[in-house]
Amino acid sequence: MAGMSDVVGTQRQFGDGPLSRAAALIYTLLVVEVLLLVSTAPGLVTLLLLDRDVSNLPLVAACALPVGPAVSAGLYALHHQRLDLTDLHPARVFWRGYRANLGVLRIWVPLLVWLTVIAVNLAHLSAAGLPRWWAVPLVGVGAGAAVVGVNALVITSLFTFRVRDVVRLARYFVLRTPVVTLGHALLLVAATAVALATSEAVLAVLGAVLVLALLRGSDPMIAVVREEFTA
Image (cartoon, rainbow, N blue to C red; front, side, top):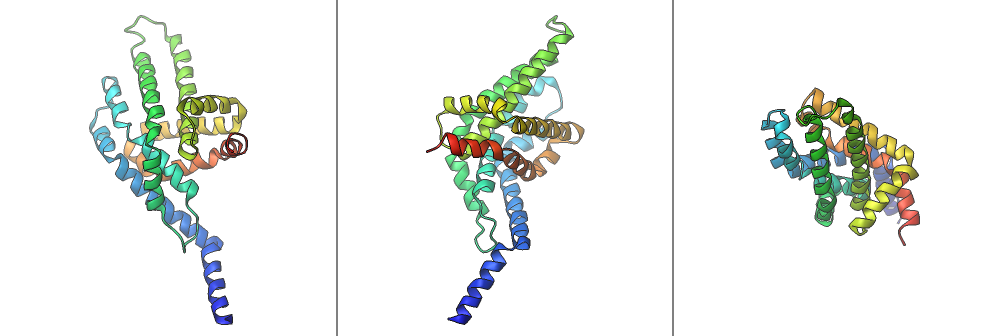
C-alpha cells in the first residue's frame, strides 16, 4: 500500500509541478497553433496570393471567414484544457470547441462585412468627394466595432447565450471592464501592425500566442459573465 501511495504521489507531483505545467502549456500552444493553421489554411493560402490592393478588400474578408470559428475553438481549448502532463488532450478539446462554436459565424460574418464596408469607404474618400477628416469618425466606428466584436467572440466561445444577448453583453463590457477593452484594442493594433509590417503568414504563426493573450486579457470579463449572467 505504501509503495502504491508513493507512486500516486509521484505522478501527482509530476503532473502538477511548475515545470510540468510550463511544459503542458507549451505543448498545448503548439497543438493549438497547428490546428489553427489547419482550420484556416484555405483562406490563409488564398490571402497570401492576393496583392495588397484596396480592390481585394472583399476577398480579404472572404479569406478571413475561417478565422472566427478557428479562434473560437482556440479560446475554448485553452480555457478548458487542464495543464497536467498526465491528462493532455488539446486536439480533442479544440475540435469539440470548433463543432460547438460554429454558431460564432452569426457574429463573425456581420463583423467582417461591417469592417470591410468601413475599409472600402476609407480607401475611397477622395473618389467620393469627402473631406479627409471623415476618416477620423470612420476609424472610430471601425475600432469600436472591432472591440465589441472581440468581446462577442470571447463570450460566445465560452458561454451559451442567444446572439442578441451576446451582442448586448459585448457592448456592455466595453465600459464595464475598461482594462479588458484597452487590452483588446492594444492587441488588435499589435496584430494589425505585425500583418502590415511583415505578412499575414507571420501573424498566423503567432496565432496560438495571440489567442492566449486574448483569453488572459479577457479574464475579468469572463469572471463577471460567469458570476452575474450564468446560473
